[in-house]
Figure 1 (cartoon, rainbow, N blue to C red):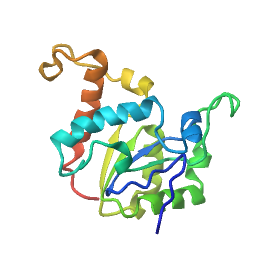
Figure 2: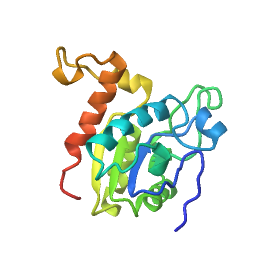
Figure 3: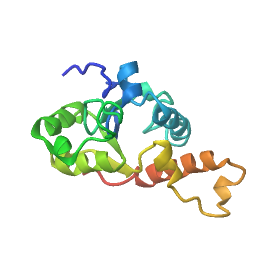
Length: 182
């Protein structure tokens, strides 16, 4: 199946995917996923992942990867009465689950970023067998700031607080890369 780019989806050229929660205002305006700060954070994380595990993360460019969302319709507070996330019912709808499976079925490694993405993962995992599934926090600024940087972490010495949090996120990805295929 040929996938077409949309605010919620970048088909990419690699067989590694990143799943986020929902496209927002920046994604709708730019007609591509992770167009705002989350996209910047993904670029910074990929720069590290590509160096440390080039066998799995073959590029440092985010749009070389499959990127999709737990829910496909753009949502942002001013447009949706203060709501910035899809509801559980929207995520678990049969057509949404089918869409997620279609968009990820040819990927071999799937990185589920955040609680909404991990919610849809639990709903479709049995239909996405024989893949490596990695669960990490979202890459939004808010989610990154919630990561606790251990005091005196030698690998983070000299890093800014922001860089340290990106490093922690990358470490969580790398810890799960060699899991058995499900």
